[in-house]
Image (cartoon, rainbow, N blue to C red):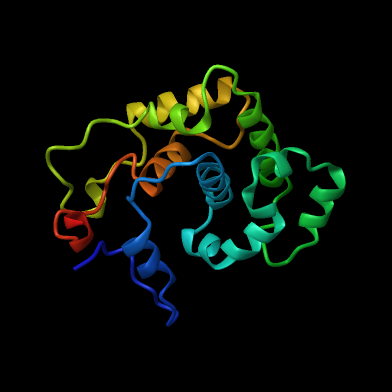
Amino acid sequence: MRCPWAVDTDGSTLYRDYHDQEWGTPLHGRDELFERVCLEAFQSGLSWITVLRKREAFRAAFAGFDVEAVAAFGPEDVERMMAEPAIIRNRAKIEASIANARAVLALADTDLDTLLWSFAPPARVRRARTVEEVPAITDESTAMARELKRRGFRFVGPTTAYALMQATGMVDDHLADCWVRER
C-alpha cells in the first residue's frame, strides 16, 4: 500500500516512481536543493504531475540547476525560457528562480543545505492515517519561508516551503499504512 496521491491515471509511472524513490527521502546538496526550491515554486497553483512531466525540460532550460549558471542568466535567458513550450512559462516564476540562485550565492553566513535543514522539525511520533491529516503549513515552514524571503528568495511561501520539506525528507509525511515509511 502506498500514499493515495501516488496513483498515475495516465498510464505512466511518474507519480508512483516519485513517491517510491524520492518523496520523503532526505536530500542534501546545494544544487539538488536549489532544483527543488525552483520546482516547488513552479508547482505553485498547479498539479505536481505537471512539474514531473516537465522536469527534464526544466533541467535543460535551467542548466541542470547549477546555481552559478542560473545566477548568471539575464533577460535573454528569460525570453528563451518564455519561448520554451516544454516548461511552465511563467515569467514571475522564471525570474524568481534566477533571483533565488543569486540569493543562494549571497548566503554569507551559511549554505543552502544548512539553512534549509535548520528548519526540519523533530520526527513525528504519530503518523497521519489519511491525507486530510497531513498539514499544508507548519510553524517550521512558516519560519523557513520568512527567513528565505528575508534573504532575498521569492515564491517561497509557507505552503511551498512545507512541500519542499516533504519532498526533501525534512519531514516524512508517508501515511501510516504506506510501505515506504518502512525504508
